[in-house]
Length: 218
Image (cartoon, rainbow, N blue to C red):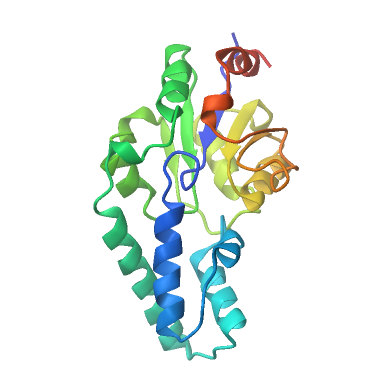
């Protein structure tokens, strides 16, 4: 059996922290007197905090000084951290545990590849930290997805060639990053959104052991 590398994004793939990002950005947008919708939130998935705030300011037609900009970024993170403080294992998305266990049982190395700077905190909160052989997050890389840096660093830390890695992603930017790294991309979400992925499933419950077995032997 091949030893492939399996790389997971965090937000919206392992845990549903997307709702907390939405609440934190919404709170920030409203403090600026501008509205923030679920549709707009979709456009921030997989996007860096700086670019996300720039987009919100563009949508609301708000001008800020550099100091105010950095203060708002810190404020958003503080709000977000307050929300994730209460996270438990119950927040792990369905069948994520089954997938991780299956890969572990078959001796496959597993990495996290996330833009989140809070990835380690979250994994510890939901008791999954020990499951990962490597963790690459926003503190380890300088280029945001769709740049493949986060996945290339993860592959390197797992001592795997990019073409032998499989990435699980819920964001278009993440799928594009995996593709440009030459990896197999598995989209978790809506096929019409993630159509660039090699395979798409609406969630992990749709991924059969047979499908996983085929991935191990690809």
